[in-house]
Length: 127
Image (cartoon, rainbow, N blue to C red; front, side):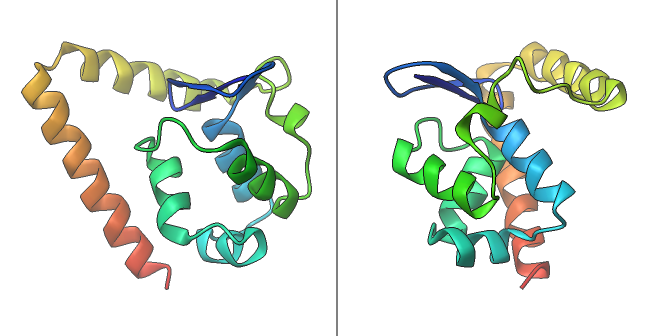
């Protein structure tokens, strides 16, 4: 199976899934914080944060299954064919991705570090 997380391809023998965006969308729809998802899934909040930020490019299938179970959905619910992001969200992601691609390798590294910093601050705020 191949799982896509924030544009990164995750390989886990079998099918194709739209991972991160769908996981985050479902979590937000259920008004569940990362802290609550960590408690329900047994997946450490640090791991969830890295997956959420796109830094973990190859989470274990068991991790994805635990997250999906805690969200009370199925792996199939993450399928790209079933996932239709809002047009404005999709347009924003396209703009961000295009700007990111225009950066040098050093600029991309700096941007990823900055995003991790912001995500870390938000995690602290959610505690």
